[in-house]
Length: 301
Image (cartoon, rainbow, N blue to C red; front, side, top):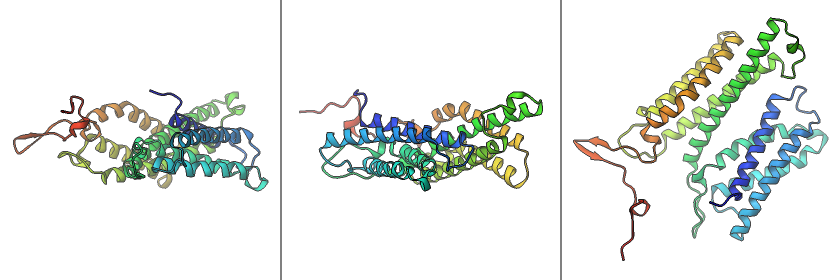
């Protein structure tokens, strides 16, 4: 396996975009118009790696890399990243990195889905968008719930310190307790929207076998997670659930998600590469695999 390919470079670029997003969310306390060169440098590092990825792909193809959805998406993101860096140098557009980084990170995760980058053929190939949208939005939803749980834990720690009058609460470099509550709420809302989009996209995907989409173990589990976060948001925003109970519920929900994710994935026929055989009308049926893809296949003369 070749290391440090164009996709590895792009993965590192998306990592830098994610770090820039985290910095913008958790560490900015004086507004978006502050001269913050740390965030600018993180974004610039991501764009530099992104440029390297585009260069490697272009040199390997001897042409502009826009032959599939992965290449087209990364090309557009690269142009957006360069434009953001240029505009951020202007006094009136200092805030633009804080808005560009989440967009670059979110769309970058989508572009990394393998189905968007099929092997090159005689014609451009732009399929696989729906499956990639499903996987990317579900993955980002879990990430948003994880960040919400981190913010909620920070909220609980700072609230406890304030209640017992600890000096470290006054000298803390963490965002204020009100900002942490706002961050937690917004991250849960973002994760909820992404999870909704992912579930809807998954319901439209073609399926093999007799398993219905909403009868699958993983889908039912995802629907339960969806209901848990919906209840938390509605209770907090519309029925006055105290911030402490809301934060504690967010942490517990994410711990439950982590502990049960692997088990439900193993029990899900729709999320297995080789789904188990199903019995229909007394006969065993299995998903058909093209002979050329089977490990034991050997062409005859």
